[in-house]
Image (cartoon, rainbow, N blue to C red):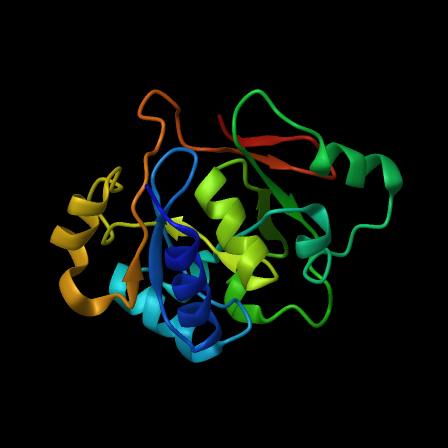
Length: 185
C-alpha cells in the first residue's frame, strides 16, 4: 500500500529532477518531469531507449495535458477526456512550445489520462503531467512489480512506489486523436 507520504516523496523527486518508478494501469512506468531535459535524458539512458522514439505523458486530468497538446476542438477534447474500456493513449498535435525530446521524430505527442490510482495521486501531488514509459530496459519485458523494477534498475532510480498493476490488462491502446486510426490495439 502506497502512503500519502510516499506519494509526496516521489513528487518531490520529480520536482528535483529525479527518475522514479510507479505502477500504472498495466505495467510499472518510469517517470520524470517532462520539462526537465536532463531528467528525460537520464530516463532514456536507463531504459536504453532512443530519443527519436518519443515518450508518453500521463496526467490525472485533461487540464494537466493541455499545456502539451494543440487541440482546441471541443469534440476531440471530450473524446480525449472520456473514459475508455481499456487504457488508451492518444496521439495529438503538440503545441509549438512542447519540447522536442517528448515527441522524438514524430509530429505528434502521446498522452493519456491515467486511471491508475497511484499514478493519478502522483500527478495530482506533482501538479502536472509526467513522462510515463514502461519500466524495463529496451528488449526486456515490462516490469509488473516493484521487485522486477529493482532487478532491472537497482539503485539507479530515485524512488519506486509500491502497488499493483492489472496483470490481465493489455498495454494501452494507441489511437490518433484526429484521424481515429488505431496504431496499437
